[in-house]
Image 1 (cartoon, rainbow, N blue to C red):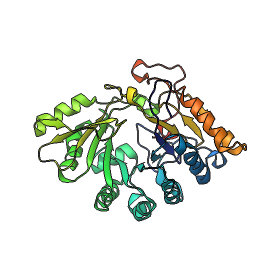
Image 2: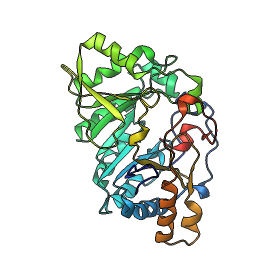
Image 3: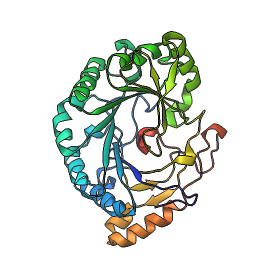
Length: 324
């Protein structure tokens, strides 16, 4: 499956819920958002069908997101079901970690091998100020449990000058002591993120070099990798940077997103896509839906335009509603 610019699309990110048990300031308003009615949310069976339809088109990699995916009941069953599809090679999840530890065994048995955990600070008070929840210890316990269980663990931090800019080094040092990756993701002007000022990757890297000495760039692990990783002497893990604002990586984009209400979203910035729910519930065959998906993917935009503040056809929803 290729888009109109020759990029091979083999990665599907699936939002299983628009609900979240945290209220991170750059992601969701403190009073939350209007949740999608239950009947408008794709069922687990419909989510599985979409994966089954798209696997013959070349989808090999899946990532489950939200909202917070672990608030969706029976997520482990869905992961187990899609893991049984022969062409699916890699299943990952992005979570805030609050519910991870008690679900870890079931997720591992289902086939989850990689987990990205959002963590914006190592300071308990700052964590509560950002998320609205005093849960840092709970999340840290989940991080260590996942790592000890043999999962590949990556920590995702969104640095904001107003929220956590003074705690960057403390986060980075988690990769010194544990075999995990700490990644700094440039803030994108989506939803509540427009109210804050992100910190560029180059500024953070320069600060870490001043503190820990020179580093070397690690080789890219896979096609379509959005992060650049660096190795510091004495660190067991890696430091990564995802830089959609300062180092646009759209030329290598290999992904599309499925929102919880069934829109196949072609680009994070734009509202372009195709509504799959009417097709899934309207009696269309797998082959008919597959052809519609192919036609939609050929219209995938060439690149986002966040830095140009392009409002034309931009998605106006909050990130929690779009899916990570």
